[in-house]
Image 1: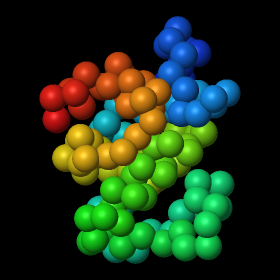
Image 2: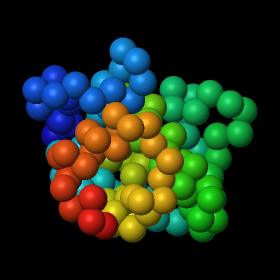
Image 3: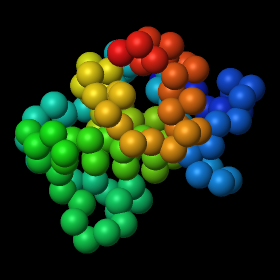
Image 4: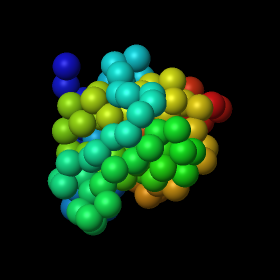
Length: 113
């Protein structure tokens, strides 16, 4: 299953200058872990400390922010983000404006989550 990209949606939402935000087609396809420790690949987190304890609310938010901001592939979203958890923490995430806009335009329920 392919992620919705800003170019296929006809709208350019950028995660950062020159990089389109990647958005999952549905929240249901996001089946990432909900507990335990997760180590992000270097392509998503460049610093030395890339592990996150999902039981720690601050770690969870930090991991989600990095994955949503840095992902260039739908597979990363599906493997690392959980749809229900994303909906629960959405308004607490510190995201670039373009990332937030891209996700909320595709998943209108996130606006009111």
